[in-house]
Length: 178
Image (cartoon, rainbow, N blue to C red; front, side, top):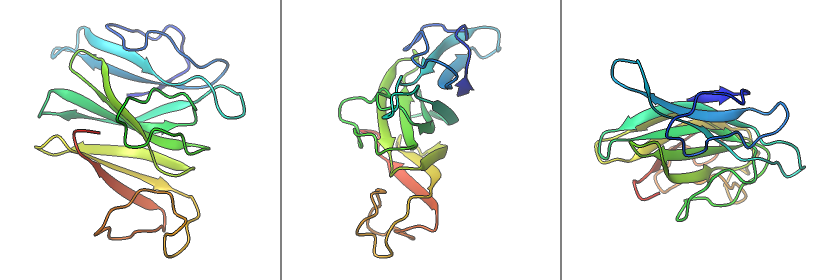
Protein backbone atom coordinates (compact mmCIF):
# COMPACT_ATOMS: atom_id res chain seq x y z
CA UNK A 1 0.00 0.00 0.00
CA UNK A 2 0.98 3.60 -0.47
CA UNK A 3 -0.13 6.55 -2.56
CA UNK A 4 0.31 7.55 -6.18
CA UNK A 5 -0.30 10.46 -8.54
CA UNK A 6 -0.20 8.15 -11.56
CA UNK A 7 -3.22 7.67 -13.81
CA UNK A 8 -1.60 4.56 -15.26
CA UNK A 9 -0.66 2.73 -12.07
CA UNK A 10 -0.83 -1.02 -12.78
CA UNK A 11 -4.25 -2.41 -11.86
CA UNK A 12 -5.41 -6.03 -11.93
CA UNK A 13 -8.69 -7.48 -10.64
CA UNK A 14 -9.26 -3.99 -9.26
CA UNK A 15 -11.95 -2.89 -6.86
CA UNK A 16 -11.35 0.66 -8.18
CA UNK A 17 -9.75 0.63 -11.62
CA UNK A 18 -9.23 4.41 -12.02
CA UNK A 19 -8.25 7.33 -9.84
CA UNK A 20 -11.16 9.40 -8.56
CA UNK A 21 -8.98 12.37 -7.68
CA UNK A 22 -8.30 15.15 -10.10
CA UNK A 23 -5.37 17.50 -10.27
CA UNK A 24 -2.34 16.85 -8.10
CA UNK A 25 -4.05 14.84 -5.34
CA UNK A 26 -2.74 11.47 -4.20
CA UNK A 27 -4.74 8.25 -4.39
CA UNK A 28 -4.06 5.27 -2.13
CA UNK A 29 -3.37 1.89 -3.70
CA UNK A 30 -3.44 -1.72 -2.54
CA UNK A 31 -1.48 -4.38 -4.43
CA UNK A 32 -0.76 -8.08 -3.89
CA UNK A 33 1.89 -10.09 -5.72
CA UNK A 34 2.05 -13.83 -6.25
CA UNK A 35 4.50 -15.76 -4.01
CA UNK A 36 7.34 -15.48 -6.53
CA UNK A 37 6.79 -11.74 -7.07
CA UNK A 38 6.34 -12.19 -10.82
CA UNK A 39 2.67 -11.21 -11.23
CA UNK A 40 -0.05 -9.14 -9.61
CA UNK A 41 -2.81 -11.10 -7.89
CA UNK A 42 -4.68 -7.81 -7.60
CA UNK A 43 -3.89 -4.13 -7.60
CA UNK A 44 -6.39 -1.34 -7.07
CA UNK A 45 -6.71 2.34 -6.40
CA UNK A 46 -8.52 3.28 -3.17
CA UNK A 47 -9.90 6.76 -2.74
CA UNK A 48 -12.58 9.37 -2.94
CA UNK A 49 -12.82 12.37 -5.23
CA UNK A 50 -13.63 15.59 -3.39
CA UNK A 51 -13.08 17.56 -0.20
CA UNK A 52 -15.61 19.75 1.62
CA UNK A 53 -14.10 22.75 -0.15
CA UNK A 54 -14.63 21.18 -3.56
CA UNK A 55 -10.97 20.43 -4.19
CA UNK A 56 -9.61 17.01 -5.08
CA UNK A 57 -9.53 14.46 -2.27
CA UNK A 58 -6.20 13.07 -1.08
CA UNK A 59 -5.90 9.47 0.09
CA UNK A 60 -2.72 8.01 1.56
CA UNK A 61 -2.16 4.33 2.35
CA UNK A 62 0.25 3.94 5.27
CA UNK A 63 0.21 0.33 6.47
CA UNK A 64 -1.02 -3.10 5.42
CA UNK A 65 -1.26 -6.41 7.28
CA UNK A 66 -2.46 -9.90 6.41
CA UNK A 67 -5.40 -11.29 8.37
CA UNK A 68 -4.75 -15.05 8.57
CA UNK A 69 -8.24 -15.79 9.93
CA UNK A 70 -9.95 -15.13 6.61
CA UNK A 71 -7.05 -14.67 4.19
CA UNK A 72 -7.61 -10.94 3.74
CA UNK A 73 -5.65 -7.72 4.26
CA UNK A 74 -6.32 -4.64 6.36
CA UNK A 75 -5.12 -1.29 5.04
CA UNK A 76 -4.79 1.84 7.17
CA UNK A 77 -4.19 5.38 6.03
CA UNK A 78 -5.53 8.91 5.92
CA UNK A 79 -7.99 10.72 3.68
CA UNK A 80 -9.55 14.14 3.27
CA UNK A 81 -12.17 12.90 0.80
CA UNK A 82 -15.85 13.26 1.71
CA UNK A 83 -16.71 10.32 -0.53
CA UNK A 84 -14.01 7.84 0.45
CA UNK A 85 -15.50 4.36 -0.10
CA UNK A 86 -17.18 3.41 3.18
CA UNK A 87 -19.10 0.13 3.45
CA UNK A 88 -22.46 -0.49 5.07
CA UNK A 89 -22.19 -1.34 8.75
CA UNK A 90 -19.07 0.82 9.10
CA UNK A 91 -17.93 1.83 12.56
CA UNK A 92 -17.80 5.52 11.49
CA UNK A 93 -19.73 6.35 8.34
CA UNK A 94 -19.35 10.14 8.42
CA UNK A 95 -16.18 12.02 7.50
CA UNK A 96 -15.12 14.13 10.49
CA UNK A 97 -13.28 16.87 8.61
CA UNK A 98 -9.80 17.93 7.57
CA UNK A 99 -7.79 14.68 7.45
CA UNK A 100 -9.30 11.52 8.97
CA UNK A 101 -7.89 8.03 9.36
CA UNK A 102 -9.44 5.13 7.45
CA UNK A 103 -9.38 1.36 7.89
CA UNK A 104 -10.23 -0.86 4.92
CA UNK A 105 -10.34 -4.63 4.48
CA UNK A 106 -9.85 -6.45 1.18
CA UNK A 107 -10.56 -10.12 0.55
CA UNK A 108 -8.06 -12.40 -1.19
CA UNK A 109 -9.55 -11.47 -4.59
CA UNK A 110 -8.80 -7.78 -4.02
CA UNK A 111 -12.38 -6.66 -3.38
CA UNK A 112 -13.24 -4.18 -0.64
CA UNK A 113 -15.30 -5.93 2.04
CA UNK A 114 -15.18 -3.43 4.92
CA UNK A 115 -14.18 0.21 5.19
CA UNK A 116 -14.63 2.92 7.81
CA UNK A 117 -13.44 6.37 8.73
CA UNK A 118 -11.76 6.41 12.15
CA UNK A 119 -11.42 9.42 14.40
CA UNK A 120 -11.71 13.13 14.80
CA UNK A 121 -10.50 15.80 12.36
CA UNK A 122 -6.73 15.80 11.94
CA UNK A 123 -6.36 12.08 12.74
CA UNK A 124 -3.80 10.02 10.84
CA UNK A 125 -3.79 6.21 10.55
CA UNK A 126 -0.20 4.97 10.57
CA UNK A 127 -0.10 1.28 11.40
CA UNK A 128 -2.19 -1.87 11.72
CA UNK A 129 -1.76 -5.35 13.20
CA UNK A 130 -4.13 -8.31 13.54
CA UNK A 131 -4.59 -11.09 16.06
CA UNK A 132 -5.58 -14.73 15.62
CA UNK A 133 -9.28 -13.81 15.96
CA UNK A 134 -9.25 -11.46 12.95
CA UNK A 135 -9.36 -8.24 14.97
CA UNK A 136 -7.44 -5.25 13.65
CA UNK A 137 -5.42 -3.00 15.93
CA UNK A 138 -4.85 0.47 14.51
CA UNK A 139 -2.33 3.04 15.65
CA UNK A 140 -2.01 6.65 14.61
CA UNK A 141 -2.12 10.14 15.99
CA UNK A 142 -4.51 13.03 16.30
CA UNK A 143 -3.83 16.69 16.91
CA UNK A 144 -7.49 17.44 17.57
CA UNK A 145 -7.81 19.55 20.72
CA UNK A 146 -9.89 17.62 23.26
CA UNK A 147 -10.94 18.79 26.71
CA UNK A 148 -9.23 17.06 29.65
CA UNK A 149 -12.37 15.12 30.66
CA UNK A 150 -12.97 14.00 27.08
CA UNK A 151 -16.51 15.38 26.93
CA UNK A 152 -15.85 17.13 23.62
CA UNK A 153 -13.34 14.67 22.24
CA UNK A 154 -14.85 12.90 19.22
CA UNK A 155 -12.04 10.35 19.00
CA UNK A 156 -13.56 6.94 19.82
CA UNK A 157 -12.25 5.47 23.05
CA UNK A 158 -13.44 2.51 25.05
CA UNK A 159 -13.62 1.71 28.73
CA UNK A 160 -10.26 0.73 30.16
CA UNK A 161 -8.50 3.11 27.77
CA UNK A 162 -5.07 3.89 29.19
CA UNK A 163 -5.05 7.51 28.01
CA UNK A 164 -8.65 8.47 27.10
CA UNK A 165 -7.65 11.94 25.85
CA UNK A 166 -4.52 13.18 24.06
CA UNK A 167 -1.44 13.90 24.31
CA UNK A 168 -1.62 12.79 20.68
CA UNK A 169 -1.31 9.04 20.16
CA UNK A 170 -4.24 6.67 19.86
CA UNK A 171 -4.68 2.95 19.38
CA UNK A 172 -8.00 1.34 18.45
CA UNK A 173 -9.06 -2.30 18.10
CA UNK A 174 -11.76 -3.19 15.57
CA UNK A 175 -13.47 -6.56 15.67
CA UNK A 176 -13.92 -8.51 12.46
CA UNK A 177 -17.52 -7.30 12.02
CA UNK A 178 -16.45 -3.67 11.34
